[in-house]
Amino acid sequence: MRRQHWLAAVGIVAMLCGACNNTAPEPASVDIPSAQAKLAIIRAATDPFLSRHSLTLRVEGAGGCSSSTELFPNTGYASRRNLYQAGAGVLYVVGQFDARVIDSLHCTITLAEFRTLDRYVTFLGSFDENEQKQWTYFPASQRSELPFEKR
Image 1 (cartoon, one colour):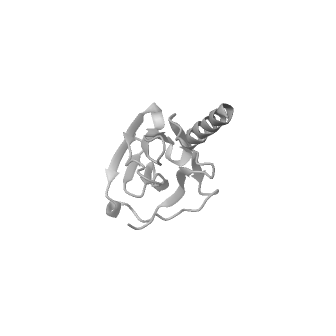
Image 2 (cartoon, one colour):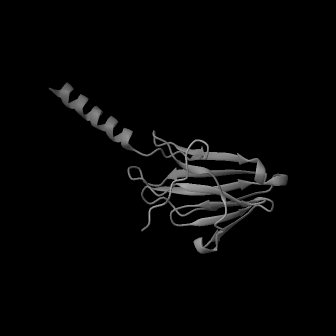
Image 3 (cartoon, helix red, strand yellow):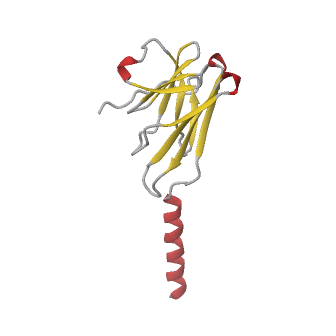
């Protein structure tokens, strides 16, 4: 009887640990030759069980410059970020609740209001979870642009 209780306890602990978020930072990155830049968004769990993550955007530009900033955190399945090319050396990283303008030539990242963004842009891809809930980058050739939910 004791053995059954022990096995049940081990099974419950294993099940709970399997449901836990990975605490290691998960980077997803993409090289963008047209902008002479490499972008990465690093996702790190902030809650052991709920879908809560901090998100850090890092850009490496021409000439070896680099910059990083914290993005609006994922507070419940809102971590996807769409990536757009807006002009020579200008990129947009747009999320459900925030938008960043990246000048890859000067390695600057600026928080922008949605209404100030140029509408004539090229969708390059998305930073998002795959089917296995792993953080990754999906190029436009692999997955079409997905709209954000209106709230």
